[in-house]
Image (cartoon, rainbow, N blue to C red; front, side, top):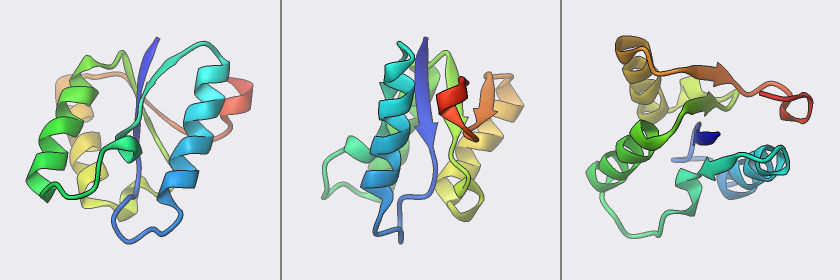
Length: 98
């Protein structure tokens, strides 16, 4: 399954480690992870959102990290999933499965 990760990036100094840990756990379950935390530095907010929305659309499932409500971008992604019926889940304990 292709899984898009969503959560707070801006203002979170630990975001790369947080997303890397979640991606590692999901990949260990055999999933392909679309991880926005691996995008290069130096793009505009609009560029990041365009790329993230394309990743979200390519995914079978969007998994939202616990802090997603603190992120304007992740809240937009949540709203998109709710509006379009895109399957989504909360990241609680990936070691037990999505």
